[in-house]
Image (cartoon, rainbow, N blue to C red):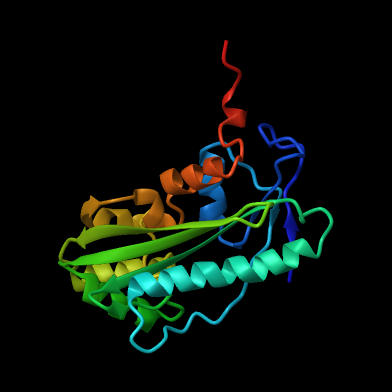
Length: 220
């Protein structure tokens, strides 16, 4: 398993007594943590089989995958002296129309099919986040967000697919990019649709003793 270290000299990084590992290679999840002043000490991507199980709901799938990533990353981290006492974060995002789970599009046709299905209707985004404390306590949340797209024209879909922004994204779109122009209504967590529900993540970390606001500046 490849580990990507984060520069320890980054302003606002927590003291060595509170190390943090993000079990993801997603630049979006890293950017979201950085947005709220949290700089992971390392990235520890966990590759697992993401195939939905028979009769598994989208919510259950998101939870299972986040748990699976946490388990794999946790096992790897505990074998390393510099990560054994770290907090770990894992997450997974699932886009669904009813009980139908949309793929993480890798081909233009997949992305176009997703966009045609989402056009003019509401869909749901489930993002599960799991936290593992240095003491071995696991906490988790699944955040459900409802998103409605405008009716997409063939030109909308063709142009968006040509942007290549959709590649590897659940449901074939990235709400933080060009596809933000498609959103008519969003009920829930915008950051969860991007890939990490910030309020819930910080609440879980803080509940286990991680200094989530340490980099925000001294209080007079």
